[in-house]
Length: 438
Figure 1: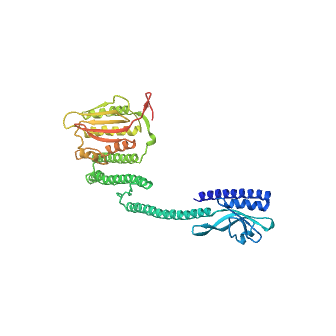
Figure 2 (figure 1 turned 135 degrees about the horizontal axis):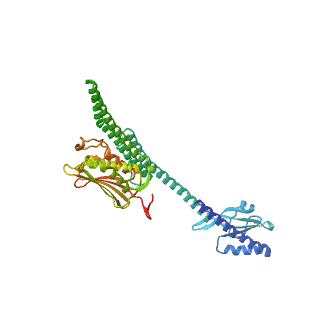
Figure 3 (figure 1 turned 60 degrees about the horizontal axis):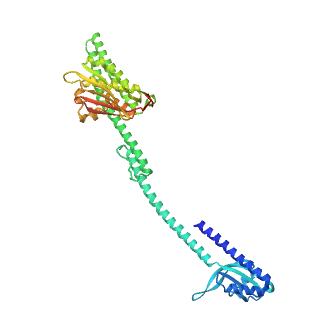
């Protein structure tokens, strides 16, 4: 508004000044040609014509000789050059005072010439702009204050809700989540990211709590058994053979405990994202073939056949050692826990492409796992009642699940009818011209 007012005022003033100067040049030319009589004649003609021009020729006593400017003030006639002055003009019902701008010239014989233009419309336009500016600024300020108060109240209320929720979380209630307004703005996106982080933290803490409980229950038994065995050997009569047998059994128990703790450490490292830098591109089918070849003698000793179903290469970008360990765990679990009640056991290890993924499948014909127990079987130290009497720590499947998550994959337990079918899905590496590329 200020720019528009300034440009309008400059344009109007320039146009008015040019008009007055043109009038003055014309009157000056007439004065040079015919003197005061000629000037009187021209001023009278222009005063009678329609327009906004103001003219006055006054004698030495200030009396009007010609022109349409009536009752000039003595102060106006005493001035020289450019002046701004009020004047009386006819109006409906009488006269009104208007504003004009012009120039005053001294003529010979004490005569004065006033040439001007009415600027009352310009003054009214200035008043309109001034009023609009004041009202506009006031309205904008009012809207700004009200809008600022509204936004601040909404923002502070949402921040207060986030703060209250954060305080409850800090006091131990990890089930709390930051509220979402549903607007999809920056605060909603921030709250969503923090909620995802809280979900992960709650999951890790729940896992840690579960591990602690499982350690307290599952490791207490072998430690108690070791302690009782040693105490019994010390109380009984000294016998080197008894001592030897006790030490051998104690070492076996200690080795099992060490394997359990090593598995826990491996799972912890995997869930922390360790060993990602050791990824390489290799053929998962070839790795599965090596694992089958390694476990065939062990399976034959248990009257179980192990076969491979990997008709074509399957390239993955992964940690070779971890996938080899996961495959070995699956085959070892199948040998330990998946033997049928009667007949010969059979284990099939397969590798097959599935779109942009590769699936590693280990299936057996054993008793399997009930559907309502499969999710629990993937947790740490989870052992079904049917496998309590067999050696193991219940960490095999949870280790495989951690390996799958590290590689951006997943694990699923399915019914093999009969038996269990474990499917590990991993992202495949795209190939080009027969060569793998990461």
